[in-house]
Image 1 (tube, rainbow, N blue to C red):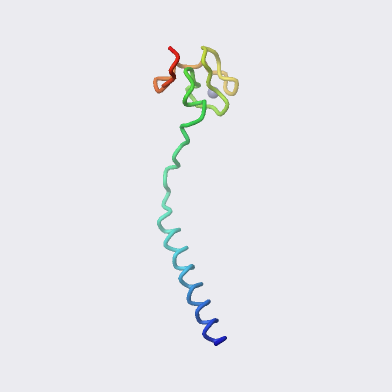
Image 2 (cartoon, rainbow, N blue to C red):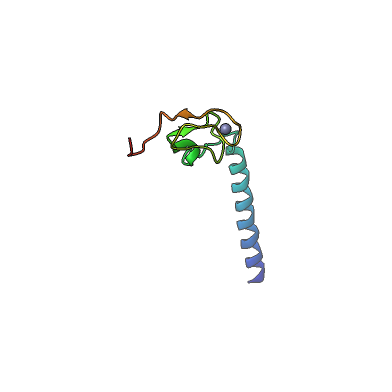
Length: 80
Ligand SMILES: [Zn+2]
């Protein structure tokens, strides 16, 4: 019985190891999907560099990189 358990655990371990290998193989240099849901993407005015923490409802400059905000063509706000 104990031998059987050891065999089973070894077997499942090898399966897990195989799965890990295939996963790492499939993990090719995938281009990271950028999270476009932050205010630096959804605000009416956004930094052209999409700096984190940037974005505003009014024209201004990015507090992070100092570039002028640009009107966000993707802005979907209700207020206009
Ligand atoms: Zn910026």
